Amino acid sequence: MKRPRTALALLAVWAAVAAPATAADESAACRNLDDDGSRLACYDRAAGRVAPLSVAPTPVTGSATPAAGASASAVPAAAKRDWWTPGTYVPQTFAERWELEPATKDGVFKIKAYQPTYVLIGNWRKNTNPNPCSPNPLNCASGQGDYMHGDAKFQISAKTKLWEDIFGTPIDLWAAYTQQSYWQVYDGKTSRPFRETDFQPEAWVTVPLSVGPEWLRWRMLNLGLSHQSNGQSDPLSRSWNRVYATFGLTSGDLSVLIKPWWRVPETGNTDNNADVGDYAGRLEVQAVLPYGANVFSATVRSNLKNSSSTPNRTSLQADWAFPLYGQLHGYVQGFSGWNDSLQNYNFRNSGIGIGISLTGWR
Image (cartoon, rainbow, N blue to C red):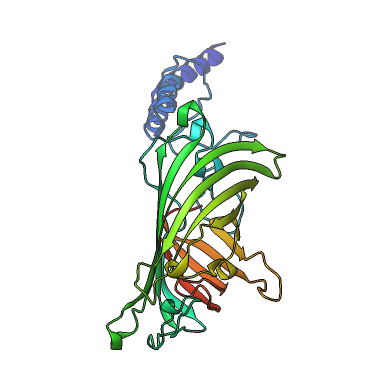
């Protein structure tokens, strides 16, 4: 019986000697753990204080992996300005442009965009008119110089509201000014003259409406008076006064302005251009369509005549504004017909211009 007892005693001595070595080895292993929670649990196990537990490492900020079935938050892609995809460009609505609803009213004496404001750095015309003339013999000139076919054209246009909600009604009174200039900037031989500048002040009242279905709704009626002249003396003086109505319709983003007018007659030798309506027209229809980040417009004018004495004369102008940088837009304009400028109201021409647009016209 002594041998088993001796063996047990030797085993106990060996365990007592080996235990510190094992704990020391385990303590050394614990020191190599980077995570605080795992290192503490390791020391507890080495000291025999707690049962071995599986402690998950604490996630490191910025390197967490989503649990199975959980979707990581998508990082938004950089904004892309798509020229052609509808919906990437939010145009000013027709109601906002003309302030037709109470929420769009913006008070008086604030400068707003009216017609496009642009500079056509290159403006080419197929023909030039060295002998502008009208039925009035006092307004026929000859030998006005051989103008270049290419020049620069610029237009500035702005409006402001003079009276909002007239007498408690939703009717507003507006005034506007538009100026077109034709500059022979590339003709250094003749000191780069301005060939012509046309001035057009006007005033009108706007009556908000909402008539018809959504796909074609009558939204406003403007009743106004305009004066246009080129500020020159005879024989180059040209001018006319008009009373007009503008019917504004919308179909989605498309807006259509139908504008008939009546010329205020002049008498005797004071009429510089008695037949201006037979060439410049009696009706104008303009369609404006924003698409993607572009704005397209087409304007058609007609004299509403079709007889042997006065044939039908129709003019067409097409405009395209496209983004360049911020609010700066490229601008392309094509024209074919009569009344490209007031001095040449009865001279047929065609051409194209390219430049920049300086206001966010819609």
